[in-house]
Image (tube, rainbow, N blue to C red; front, top):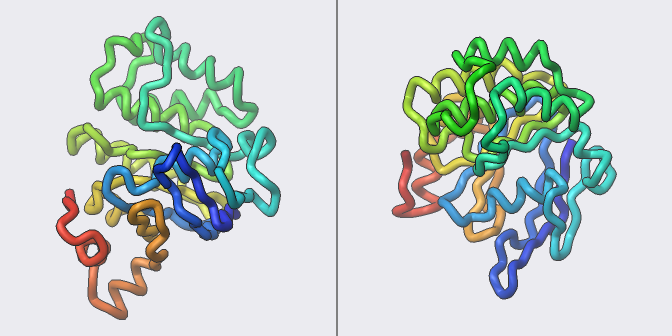
Length: 233
């Protein structure tokens, strides 16, 4: 379980995350939603212990996130973060050196499903292939929490299908998946919980099946209601 309590992050006078209190539980795929600049990436980086909060706290199983929690929390950033000289095989070796829970066998299996050749150089990958590589190397960890920042951004529909299938395959009763995105339609197809963030503030957390059954509205409908004219893709 991961919990943020009055979590706040400021960059100078700008408040990126504003007193967010939130508890995420195993067995769920959470869609963290909001237009660009809502605070999704900043919350994720604090959850991954890559950024310190200005105030408040974020806990993993009751303890502050830090060096120990990184062993069980897998974070995928939006930016490419591999050295240009690396091959796809080198990327796996790099992760294996850093993370005890990294599975080379699982990585090889995911590469086959993503149709990625281990000998390919990262500098030669298209944006879609790079997105698939980031997913494969992140999901090859046997983590308790997966934080995927914009996993579908900038890639075509076929690549999105492969990534979606990979994410769903790794969902389990004992782990937590959090996907941040502004691509609402993609998120609705794989998530069972929705976290709506606006201007750094938590608006609400909703169970999608209950929302559809009790209110007869979709996640996209709720997104439009909260964000007004914000684009829904």
